[in-house]
Length: 168
Ligand code: FES
Ligand code: FES
Image (cartoon, rainbow, N blue to C red; front, side, top):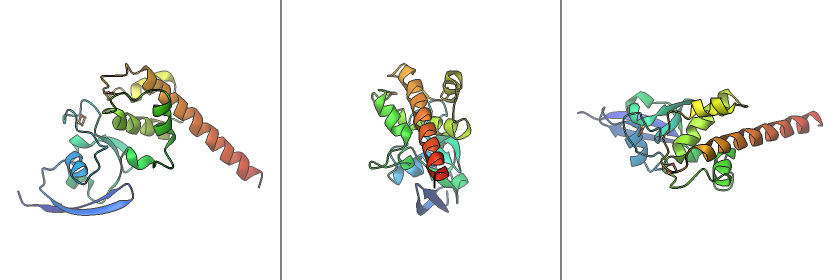
């Protein structure tokens, strides 16, 4: 198959590559070194490969790299940094929601998509949002707790910012 040029904007960096039309976004990302995007089932069943694609959570194994041409992609690692972790990163670590860690990036992306649309989710909404993600280690309880903690912390920091700007 003849390669085609694809431009991917990933975690704030731009990559232009020549790819065969059947290369999935999952493999393009991992080949570029974004190995926080995990390769699990490659059939859309486990959620380990989830990324934000133009602000929508998708399983990257089900997207061709060419379909993401020109799109903004954010991986779980791209949500924060070691110095400035995202509240979800911290909450997953704090609540023991990470054991082997293979599923974690996918859960963080699913949780990010949930909190973007529903900042104060119920437990049922959290469980529904992560229902496309599989974890073999944690039993899911700590993961649900991590999302609840992250939601509380994001809410507190938003309130703090609002109060600070009101007092200026
Ligand atoms: S690797 Fe994509 S959903 Fe499992
Ligand atoms: S922490 Fe091991 S699969 Fe989820």
